[in-house]
Length: 181
Image 1 (tube, rainbow, N blue to C red):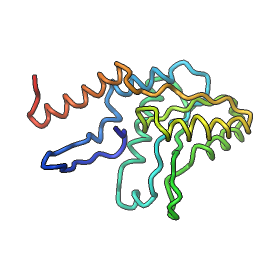
Image 2: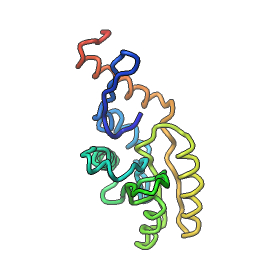
Image 3: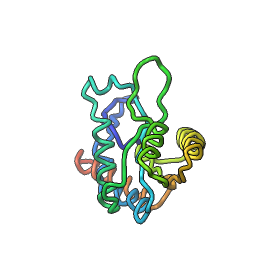
């Protein structure tokens, strides 16, 4: 699941729809807010970067991720102690969305921040782009800068996250008139 851009596709005759509002579903926001609530660290929300050309096509991906981040920060009471960065950009020879997490760590260090909590709002499970980009590369950069860096636990199979997913599916089924209830 991506918390960004919505789409509807046909796959083998079946219609598949991904809600573009998934990242603003209250239960989903609460699960993320619970993971950052109470921290004294600066929170950096992250998501997978995409080629910058998506903005020219009017794709709402970046705006939706920023909205998710803002709503999570609001629910968690972070005030102004948060920012957003992208990660996992590929080297394709074209510009990708930024600011990259490594550059954001540099920026925060320059502003005197000493502790960072990374919250990948655009990812819902542990995989290479979390374990490598954040747990290795970002942690190495933070160490070079003298920053303490932690990452929230991924949502994975957290029962609260699964309930949030079920709520999204049930809402979508109700809208399409195919509710099982």
